[in-house]
Amino acid sequence: MEQNSKSPLAKSTNIVWHQSSVDRAARSQQRGHGSSILWFTGLSGSGKSTLANSVNVALHKNGYSTYLLDGDNIRHGLCKDLGFSDLDREENIRRIGEVSKLFLDAGIIVLTAFVSPFRIDRDNARALVGENDFIEIFCAADLDICETRDTKGLYAKARKGEIKDFTGISSPYEEPQSPELKIDTGKMAIDECVDIVTNFLVNQEIISKMS
Figure 1: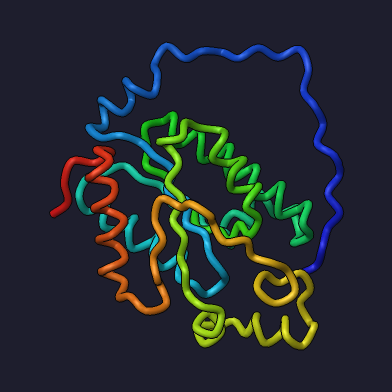
Figure 2 (figure 1 turned 60 degrees about the horizontal axis):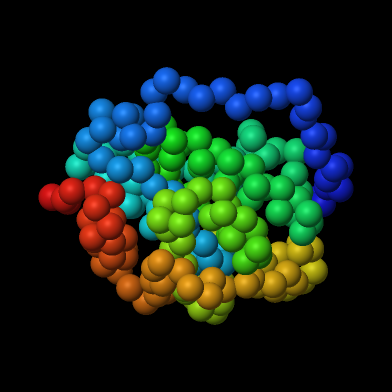
């Protein structure tokens, strides 16, 4: 994981926001459900991607419009120019927040699975949208459990010093202080975890029911 030094963002000038004639409410009405950002965060190996994907499948099977943004996949395209320095991590999450906001406006339930280790970056992503539109889901698996799930051998490399700025080893992870959901993905079965998330969406009236 080679670090890149991120250059300052250029600031656009002479631009005006164009208001679409079809708004979020109209798109959500057409889809038959609300939209929201489900922000899965946690250590590498905590089960973020597994849980986000499983929730995505469950929602899709029930006819809800969703899209999953996964950390590794995003770095193949949108964020392939970024490394893993603190500044690059900040920019990575900023871009994801902006993309998630677009999906939200499109009336889609967007699921994001990123370590997103710094609290301020997650708070900034939340601040882009309404308070009720951002659902922070903390996948709270202990570090030792995450290491046993490390099929890529990343933790072992990090402990040997072969990977710098690795979250949980040589770079900090700041746990959410007040997440909407905190799920012990280290001990709970995946089906139980999925039910917690989907039941929350039903209770928040983002979706109507699950079969």
